[in-house]
Image 1: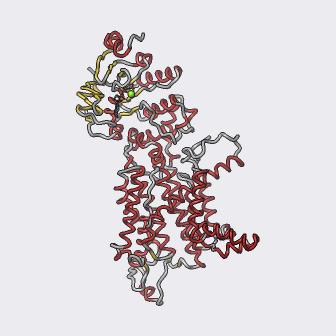
Image 2 (image 1 turned 90 degrees about the vertical axis):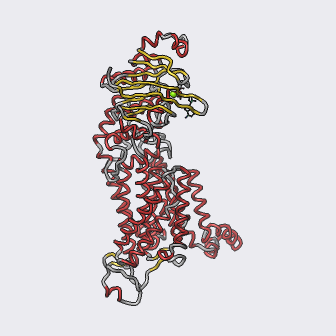
Length: 387
Length: 253
Ligand SMILES: Nc1ncnc2c1ncn2[C@@H]1O[C@H](COP(=O)(O)OP(=O)(O)OP(=O)(O)O)[C@@H](O)[C@H]1O
Ligand SMILES: [Mg+2]
């Protein structure tokens, strides 16, 4: 009956989210996802995707250039490690600030247009940034090689003896706790903590009058004008917020692995976040997180499989059968895993235009709903406010 | 003579070769309900478009309470106190009815832009109360949580009226507010409009339904082919042979 979930319900949902995230190393282990690199990737791309959803999900403006902010965040974080301190706090804060400023600049230009023109403009800007990072800006980005830590870095905030200590490179730490500690789980839980904070802010944005106005812009931007709203600054704010989230994700990439390369600004990265959001469910609270997790997980699983393993897997078909099966399926694994992703994406978009969240709500309605079937709204039609 | 809220003087507007408005002069008095009638394509909606910043006139000026609206954007004009119901309903089809009405209430309360991403919608009691109050006035309370896009055409129109009323505009422009409504709903809308007239709201209303026009209007302007062919009190207009010929076409009113 109520279309506005009550605050208590939100709080309960948030707490469940926290528990699910914090215990994920345990329950993801049986499906082969319980190791640090992948868990970090879930959190980092989750942050990237929820931030993207603030723009795409709430306002409907589809950016194809958010990798630029991801890259900017990474470069900034590495520079913070080089110049200031190996403590991750300044690195994370600066990556958000710089990405935010960068987003303000790009948003200012791109938001003069809407629809496909906006998308193309963002794509053009991101590719421009990528090319700049690769060539002209080499003094800042170290071009093709990528930006890495060096023994001789200034690190003005770190004590001198620490800098001098050992011949090796220092590693990012949180007031002494190194990201590699506890077999890499220190880094995982830092990412989880940031994800939880980021998700909390995101939830608040969704439940704020500001978020409602963004949804209204998506629904009927013209009406917003005749209703007395200047929509440009609202779009600008959403764009910058999503840029800051992308910068934060980029910063965390550098925190867990202190290097930054131009390829992070490639359009494929921008495309990935679009796919994650659509796959999970545009405009839904949890969709982008699900999409990010699914894509990162499948990449890991499918790209790791090779032909020999496939032949082994299908050995029960006999030698010829296994070979035939393997040669077909090998198109979809290893290097070819993108083919799997493409197929998956097509299936979801065709059968579940509302993404995985739509699938979940259909299952929910079918099997767990107390209401008689057919009472629900049309699937995918403007269910943005609900989860 | 009482205060003039809206003063349209010497407005011309052409689309390509088509003269949609030719030298229009119009004064809307405070607190009055001013009807604009005329056959299809007469330029009635175009006249409102010029008043809310959707179109710039080729020449002439529109003043609202002494402020020129020339060069002003739709949101600036709304913030001055002008609200409009469109001929084809302009609502937020993906949002709930309640949210549709809360949004304009926020615009009235917080202005053209306010950045409060961490404020809670649940805490916006004042705005929500106002919205619910207006929904109640318009008999839309039972639809409160439905998506606006699923409403009937008549209900969409009523919702749009609610979205305007919640802002307590100084000037309300209504483009065929009862088109597509049943007789019962039309009468209800007439009652609502009468009620807000008692509160002193100035209104401009475009209508084809003469029952609505003669129930509400203090003054009538008749437009045909972009020019004003007659104006006056309802009685004067009713008796004007030019109007009979151009518009009423023998219809008994
Ligand atoms: N944006 C536009 N571009 C081109 N022509 C337009 C535009 N808007 C209106 N017109 C034309 O101007 C003339 C007046 O249109 P308008 O919509 O003002 O008429 P109206 O009196 O509101 O008619 P109706 O009773 O059918 O709503 C029509 O011939 C219409 O086709
Ligand atoms: Mg019209």
